[in-house]
Length: 362
Image 1 (cartoon, rainbow, N blue to C red):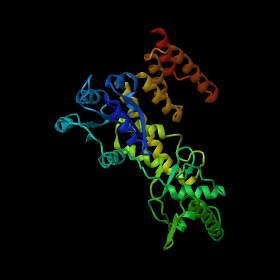
Image 2: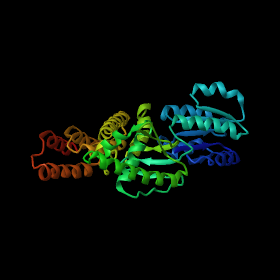
Image 3: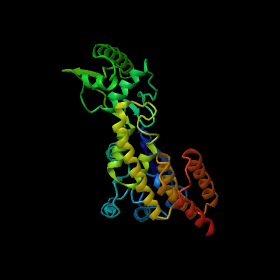
Image 4: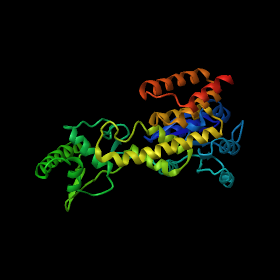
């Protein structure tokens, strides 16, 4: 979903652009403003993916507004929407993503929107939505959760959608899904489960979704929204805004609650990327002295690594830096329980000393 803000000092222009943008399923308009100052006052800039910005406005011109955005939140994509051609060169100076002339024609807007979708790894046309973070869930085009005849049918669906870019041999499928079953029985179970899966997917797509050729099987489904693939793409962009989006998609470890043994390598790889992104965001916001954001990312890191003493000390520090002494005391009590009751060991000296130092400096 692309979060968009529209800024134009003429309300009819806002309404016209809004109507055009709302024809896209993957666009979410989070604000419409006639004054750019209201954007700065009322919107978290980090929540904005794209801003459609008029240039000649009464209070501030769009080029100056864009310059302010570049200084405060450089990752926002800026699309100028104006009646004047002569500002196009100046638009490049503020690294504008697009430049659309009024009156706005749908085909010109669509070119820009499709480029935005491509940059942000968003598919407008979707056959399925596959969720792997936490547990596997598959939704059809209407957003309805697909139900499975057996638990093994669900696992086979997860297996195909996880490896949707490759042909998979029957032997490999049997080895991964029925490792402790005799081969002859596993063959029967595989074909039965495959028929259940094909039936469930055909109800959703009206077509054969799984094909077979030379002993291998492959998923013939296009336009799948897959949460872990989106996370991987966002990780590859290596920007704090992309990382922030990826973290929000991380609802739990990859297939954590399904506990499929074949998923462990992907689970470990994604967990490593998740922790790397958390540490990147933590450092980013620490450098900006945004302690509230830093705390939120460090708390997420500690959810996955509850025994990391360095992170525990850092969290006490951050609570103190944010002047939240109540949180310092509450977290220290939680650590007493962790070490004393769960691990049955003494509180580490560095944590205890950090706590005492904080109390002394209140």
